[in-house]
Figure 1 (spheres, rainbow, N blue to C red):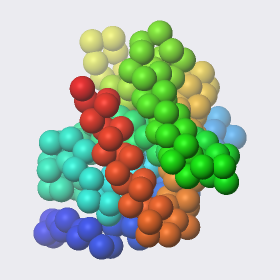
Figure 2: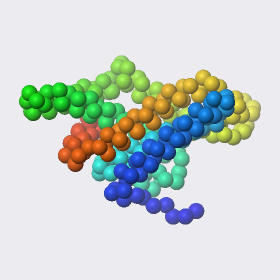
Figure 3: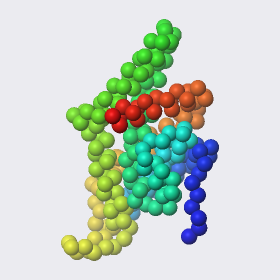
Figure 4: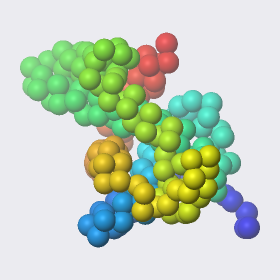
Length: 230
């Protein structure tokens, strides 16, 4: 096996775009397989699509110079060559998506008030973002429960990917890709579709931002990370 390289920060935005494109292609291929009722391989491709969407978010964060969690260092050695750590970062990717979603909501609040008062507009943006973070941390909210469902799905994603492709034998007997049901596929589809679509939108918006907007986003993300970590 050839040497694995960690991409330098200045090429990571292009890498995020490539990973997002690949996630979409894998997702569409999964839909093609599901149309002919090959739900096992379709689920495997959905897991791969989710991994690539997560990779896009982590590459974007690296481009911004964000050190999100200590596991980021592990990613630098493992992300491009090993499978299991990707699922840790797929969970992280879900949080990153919500972080940027909160910025988009906050930016809408900022634009709504900017013509009246610049300072008031900035306060409205931060208040919106803080509210988003609090809802995510409150187990009783829909946002927190949705995130937990995604995390639970990722806990079993590697097993689902393997079962969708290979014959295996365990204490219950033989397992075959064709044993995976349409219901399992639909559940996986809902989770991965949101990840793939959100990632594509986030990468597109970031590409369109000017340097000041990118710097503001990065500072807000740092604040969001501190709030979630506390």
